[in-house]
Image 1: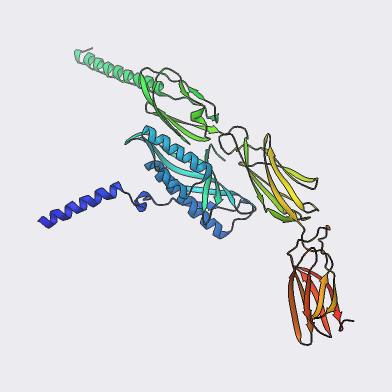
Image 2: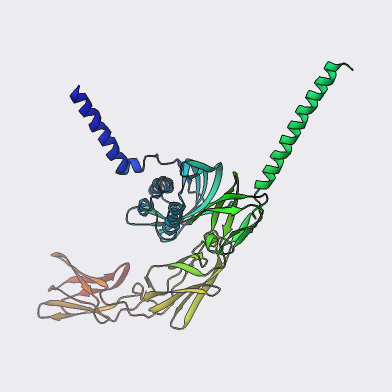
Length: 175
Length: 293
């Protein structure tokens, strides 16, 4: 009986520790969204198959990171996938959210993406992304706004050491 | 009319009146919380939103770089400052349970991100210099409205240029390098915004190679004349030139670098050899060596 109590106490303690110190796996618990990229209209340079695959992988990871960061108000998650203006503006959003106690819970239902520009030297790609999202703006645990939205994004990605990073991510009314 | 039927009519009338009253209240409440926002505003412009009703409510605004929660008085104008609307993108505004969305769009071009490649190019070569520009406003928003971008490449007083129009914030151009080697100024500009890069133009491949050969104490000394590209630019020192001597014993090859415009190599002594010279894809003259004659 004593050993059972000890085991329960240890399990409870571990649960508390796990909740206080989330592991990277639990931070990025949501799976990467589905990204369908069409590269047929990319100019002036054609996008190679390997580039297309890495682009889809890195852009999906960026979205996964961003939704987690906006939900948990964790700006420190962004730097692995965002750089420059996109990183600055997302960080500012999270800082402002933190100040007033807001966060955004985004359920990512998938992206239809057109690569429209691939620079001649191969260092920059522009995407037009039509994203299907459920967006909940939360004040603490209270939902203050909820919507199922189709949102259009212009994304500019630049080549980093071994991945593509999002440099610009802007929502637009349409393409 | 019986007493019962009068009672039924009174009850029905009362129910309808209550329903009507509720509908009116709902309509008034809905109207009170309605948010009228423009579809789009320019970055860095403030926004004044009319509100109706009375009392206070909590305003929420979430957008790029922005998250606002504050108490506002209904019936008064709700002000969003220029600082709060600097970043282009989609904003959600929520007031008293009602929501609306609007877009902030980029302002005029203020800066240009300019990728110029490569940093070193052969002279007198078509479409060899590429420039890619991304245009931004003063708040680092990508300017998506089409903008003219002037690309100019100037070397030795000679300028080649082209104007392209941005599409989704991007424009690019491919330009020819000039005939003469030297540093070229590569400028991209739009309105008052301008960015400069330097591209080093160097001699391209040799136009032709001419060599002579003389006997020396260790064998045969082969030496080129000064090597130029087809525009007359001296091919840079360090460029590899390959000398080959073929005789009955086999083939001897020496790779030499150009020094002060010429390349030279010492080949094994032979009484009957064919000596050739080449650099890259350019093959020079051939010498039939007959023991120094």
